[in-house]
Length: 171
Image (cartoon, helix red, strand yellow):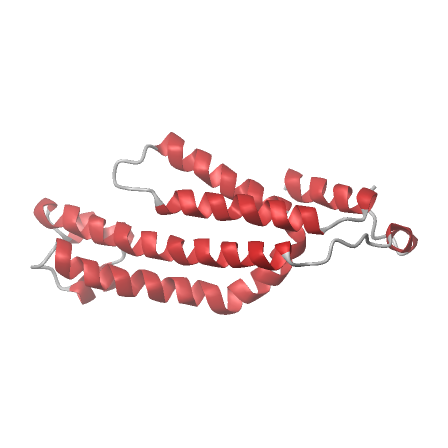
């Protein structure tokens, strides 16, 4: 939130939105890429720190976030869900061959320990990780696409006087 406000102040004072969009998209892409590297042994401090990096990138890229949130809500959330489920179903067959993949999906992550035995659980959790990593890979690609869009935008100054007249300035 602080970076979103800071970005608004920067844009209001300089009239330049493109540097914030490019920088925020670059940091978000880096953070999503780091999320892809999570494994079963990733410590809480590491994934919390990486989520902070993602938050910094997304928070500072407020101008692009509006567009990508709208598109994300309509398209990318369901696309990520599909990628996650499909990759997890394939991975269940690999990591837990005796387990019915449909039962894993219908059980849900919160109930896995109650339904499956410890001998099956490690394979199922590994399958979940495979699905999560695939979804993060999609997020990384989308964040990278936003970086490319931002890089090729013109670096024109906004008319900050006009913004102040209509009350749009954060300064």
